[in-house]
Length: 157
Image 1 (cartoon, one colour):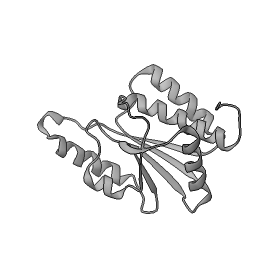
Image 2: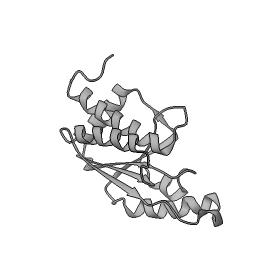
Image 3: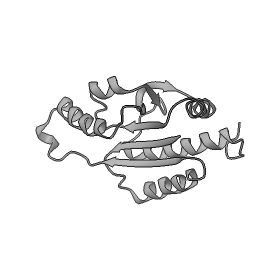
């Protein structure tokens, strides 16, 4: 199984880039992970929030293939513990899923067509985090999930 992580905008802070790189390198032992960074829209002051979400949504949907299993990282998604997330990943790997695609949207969330294309929604927390930090939290949780699946000592109950 392959995992794709789509984000709107690039990670800007050096400390976040360093942390993300650390976990991406660790994940190479478990899965094929591809990160796709969609450029932020330019001149957004002239756009409404809905127009901005629509334009970002078009760019996101261009990166998704028909057979991809799409999970939006969304504040209204299901909340899973780390062990539940590991079980979720494991179940998808054992099923017929070829590519899991996790998506972080722009500052205003997702457009309706993106929500309609999604197979699942996942919340990392009831708290709100910056889109920059969510990227680090997600790749760490993905790494943690694979160590749980493999029974390795990274995660402590």
